[in-house]
Amino acid sequence: MDAETLGLTEGEREGLMEGLIDAEGDTEGLTDGLDGETEGETDGE
Image 1 (tube, rainbow, N blue to C red):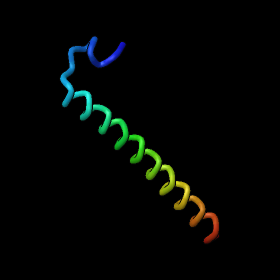
Image 2: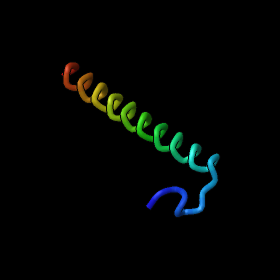
Image 3: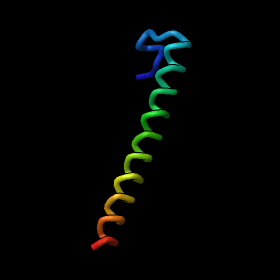
Image 4: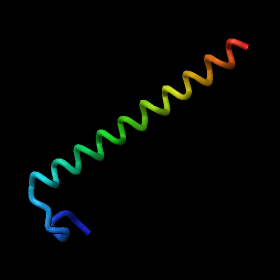
């Protein structure tokens, strides 16, 4: 099902895509941060 089927305007489609891209970036950053914390705790022991 595409955006036109859902009845979204051009702006709404662009906003949705930007939101998905932002969410993907945030997820990667969070994962990297958790990996760094885990490595730091392991190295400290």
